[in-house]
Structures are given as structure tokens and as C-alpha cells.
Amino acid sequence: MEQPAKKKVLVVDDDDAIRVMVERVLKREQFEVESARDGFEAIEKLTRNDYATILLDLMMPRVDGHGVLRYLEERPAAPSVIVMTANVNGAHETRDARPVFRILSKPFDILQLVSHVRDCTGDVT
Image (tube, rainbow, N blue to C red; front, side, top):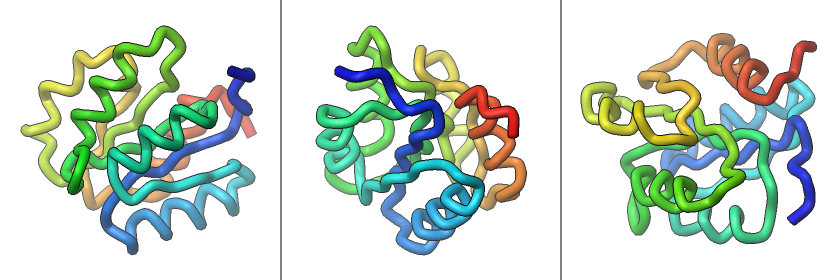
């Protein structure tokens, strides 16, 4: 696999409004953004592409965010993950997952999310 683009982000959320909003904001901030509607689609994209960061919802159909984290934990060079969840208490168990960089509770502040993505990707602009 090729090296991930420094600013390439995968947004994974089954809520269309959140996914589209995050995608638009990150593109406006000069990130290269792709998205997935659930964990199954995310894993398919992860097998074909490299990402610097993944924004990941936990509660999704087919394959949930925990399934994506299990998949990533098996990969030696997994990208960092920012978990986005309405159930922070339920996300507590993900805190120790190797690829988890941050956990944001929904609803989140979009400027804080952009700041975390910048921290995670090493983007200092």
C-alpha cells in the first residue's frame, strides 16, 4: 500500500446529515475527504485506500464502529480514529483501542472536530 496522504480523511456515519456536514466542512478546510454509510462500506474502502484519519460513528447498521475498530486493531499501520458518538458512556470501552485518538460526543462543536482532525493528521495550517 502507498503512504497515506497527510490530509486524507474517511468519514463513517449512517446519519446522512452529519456525514455530509462533516465532509463539507473538512473539504472547505482543504482535507481530502471520502465517506462511508456504515462499517461494512468503511472496511471495503480501507482495503483499497490509505487514510490519515477516520472519523467513526459507533452505532451503525451492518457493521458498527466497534467492528471497524476490531478490523483496524489487526492492521499494523492503522490510521488514527476520532470516534463520534451520542453515547459517550458506551464509548468508554473504545478508549483503549489502539487506533482511537479522541472521542467526541454528539452533538459536537464542528470547530473542535476540525481542530482534532488537524491534531490527528499533523496538519498545522
